[in-house]
Image (cartoon, rainbow, N blue to C red; front, side, top):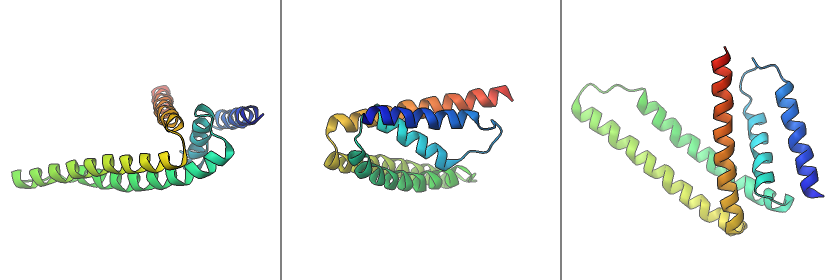
Length: 144
């Protein structure tokens, strides 16, 4: 019954998103909701599991976004000397390591609220969702 409900919710969300004007700007809330539904369905999360998991997941995403913003700002800087270039590279490497450590920390938090098999399914679902979203954006850009 729960799976049927999740499938109906997912299909209704997807049909709403497809029906929208293709020229609309990116809607982060709609994207987040679609991803949550996709992950919930693919990992077969119960409503209780989803309510425990997604706040932790959103916290991780927020922290990752902050670190990625730092990397983006470093990419925008064109150092003029070798020592500045070296410093920029070192800073970016350190942030990348911090990102991976953050991911590991949150995977451990996920494992405290969900069985490992579901965390694994979530990771696979997230990868698949992101890959498909990227393909969709790339195909839309190609049509313009």
